[in-house]
Length: 114
Length: 115
Image (cartoon, each protein chain N blue to C red):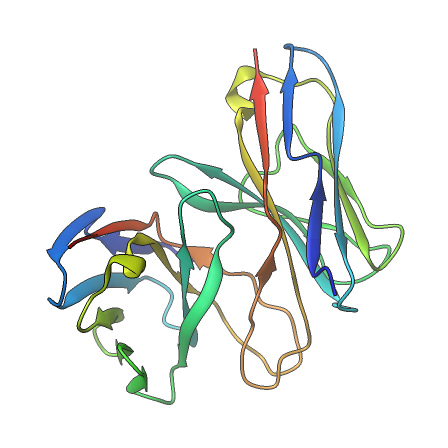
């Protein structure tokens, strides 16, 4: 099993450009999440999904959109990138836990917006 | 909403010493407290967690304690080794069995273990 994978690993954008980050999981997990990680700020939730066809806003959703058309995939879109969106983006997934809510993270995407 | 404070932001210890990282949370409804470890350039991974019906949990050299009254929980690492060097994140959430609950993370503690 590959677990959680993310595409691409690195990307450099110019201000105003758009892009889509792809997250895929092969663990049949119901829940999926997108986080951004900035120095000294921890992991902040952007958007999440509790199942195929559903999405919801997290702590810092402005400037991002998401879609979950298939259970195994969760896409994060930046319509008009800004330098403030320079960050490392992590996708995660989790399952129906009986006693815990363990989130499995992907390897991350490092995005630079110039 | 929930707010999680984590201290210290950096911690340096000598190999073999103990390390303690502390977190406080604001929402008394939170009942699930995991700790994640992130090695340099890697993804965060769960290392230990505790639910509010338990005061302490241990797994080899790591342990977590929870004080519900004071709303704080701590990670204890004994006999530290160089491979313990990493950023550690605490988190809090409201856990309902077989349901979804968002994790609110602290800002992280960078632990350095000097050989």
